[in-house]
Picture 1 (cartoon, rainbow, N blue to C red):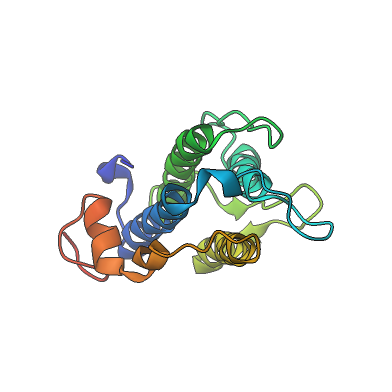
Picture 2: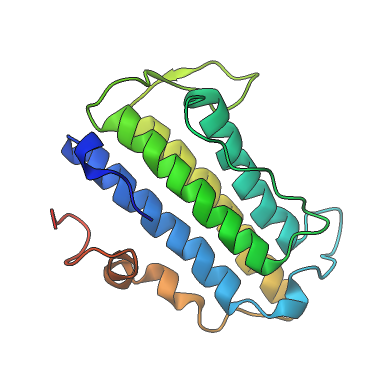
Length: 183
């Protein structure tokens, strides 16, 4: 994921962009490690499938961009009934890049975005660290659901431990060093 660096003028903005990129890499790792049979497997009870969870994450990101930064190109929605893992990975990469651009503008010192609009029914928030925290916690919640469902469905994610290796996530995103560095 690349974001025009000249727009990110503050340490908070740079950290937000990099942290959101690492967050998306975690989603990509889960899809990479997921047994393809688990993608559409019917979970117990009345809950979303893994495919529906990942399409929801992408579609919510698109909504955040549409409501908060309407001047950015909004990625198209994904259809949870027909989306493949490859389409989800591509869509998530595109929506992550848009969210990074939005975070860069909102938190990077360039101005232009002064409110985070997470939903049409919710009151907007002034931009700040809370915006990033909300976005990350939403996605972490759904990653937890995916890990739990994969296990319940008999498809445990045996090699998904990479989501905890932040130094590698940083390198995968193209940055040397690790979190907290200015490289």
